[in-house]
Amino acid sequence: MWGRETASRHGPRPSLDLGRIVEAAIGIADSEGLEGVRMSSVANRVGMATMSLYRYVGSKDELLTVMVDAAIPEPPPVDGRPWRGYLTAWTRANRDMLLERPWLLGVTNRTPPAGPRMLRWLDRALAALDDTGLSFAERINIATALTGYASSQAHLTHSMISAAEAAAADGSIGGLADYGDILGQVLDPADYPDLTAAVRANAFGANEEWIDDADFTFGLDLLLDGIEALIARRR
Image (cartoon, rainbow, N blue to C red; front, side, top):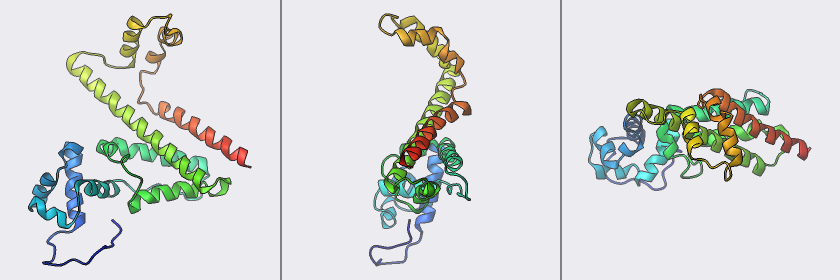
C-alpha cells in the first residue's frame, strides 16, 4: 500500500502487480459481496493459480486490508472550513461510502486504519480541529466516535432496506410502523411503561422513513454539540 518492500524479491519477474489483484478483488466484492472474495476466486479472475497470489499478498486478511484502502474515496478537503461544518461533511461522506459499498462494513472495523488513504481521513479530521484547543488524543477519540456513528448509521440503513425488501417478497413486517404494531401486541405496560407509551404515541410510525437524512443529521448534531461543549470546557 505504501510502495515499500520489506525484502528483495528473487526469482522470475512477477507477471502481475498488486493493483490489478486488488482491483479484481474489489470487483468481486462489489458484485457478490465480501463472502465472494476468496483467494481462489480472485486468482481465477486475474487468470493465475491461487498459490501464485501469495507472491503479492501474504494472506486473505492482508488482501482485505489493501482492498479497503483502495476502495474508499479521498476524504473531503478541509479548505479552511470551520471544524463543525467540516466534520459534518466528513462524517456524511464516511457514511455515504459505506452505503455505496456495503461490503466495507464487514472489513473496516477489524483493524485500526493502516493504509495511506484511510490515514488521510484521520489526518483531515485532526486538521479540522487544529484551533479548538483539544489535545491530539481527544481529537483522535472524536474521529473514532464519528467514524463509529457513520458505520452504525450505514448498518441501520442497510438493515432497513433489507427488511423492506424481505417484506415486499413475503408480506412480513415491512417497516418501523409494523414493528411498532408488533410491540404494541407483546409489551406489558407494567414492565415497559415508557416504551409502551412511545408505541401508543406512534413514535415508531412517526419515524417510518428511518433512513431519511433527518435521522442521520439529528444524531450527528448530538455528537457535534458534545464536541462543542468539550471545546468550551477546555477554553
